[in-house]
Length: 292
Picture 1 (cartoon, rainbow, N blue to C red):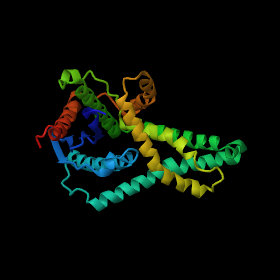
Picture 2 (picture 1 turned 60 degrees about the vertical axis):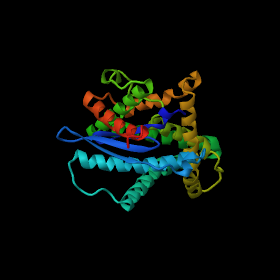
Picture 3 (picture 1 turned 135 degrees about the vertical axis):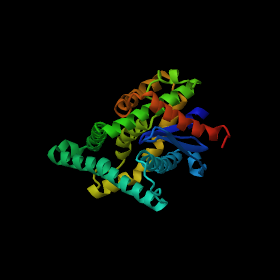
Picture 4 (picture 1 turned 120 degrees about the horizontal axis):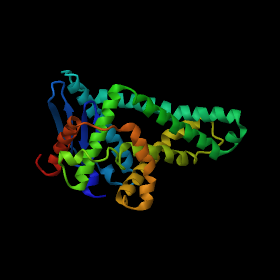
């Protein structure tokens, strides 16, 4: 993966966050029209260099950093002067969020598969069918969830900033940063976090099939917690390999589902939103270029 591929981003409330190996920066549009920028250096953790393990470390730190950027954007966009969340508050928020996600995307699909098995004997008799039902319900819930939150006007704005983030990354990878050219770039990107989540959902169907069919329900549910680090690690390596061979026709074909899914999570940004994205990008590039 080249140096360009080490830069990623995330849309926040009225803004965009970019992260590189050396630092991160988030820019947010203020109610008065100005842009507020926050940037900080980052340290590299040893676990981020170990194949298959690094995916778990990077995902965890990305979640924490994303929460930090989102909390900052909420305060700036609403002009609140409240103190930022403490590490303990941020940790508790992350834990609660992960537990809610586990209930929706791990427990509920498994329970539906169990019900399907009680109604259709073939499902309970076949580990393949059972895990296929479990996986398809998980994917369906994810798609419905993304579609439903996209109906909110506020989330729609975040999706537009998501598109602005992708356009700036495309322009950077193409070697130019002129606004008129950035506007013409696609709001979809093959290395988007949305594509990563889709890989996780699909790969989990295969990994969870390793759990013995005759295990009790609670054991199957707990096993999904135990196997999620493996799923995350494998998914990250697949995404990384896809970035390395993105010009390969087979790889281009494999990323199409992820790009299709991004049509639900990205919107076409206006010039003001692109301006915010550029500001955040300039902030993170200051670390890469040694300005900070």
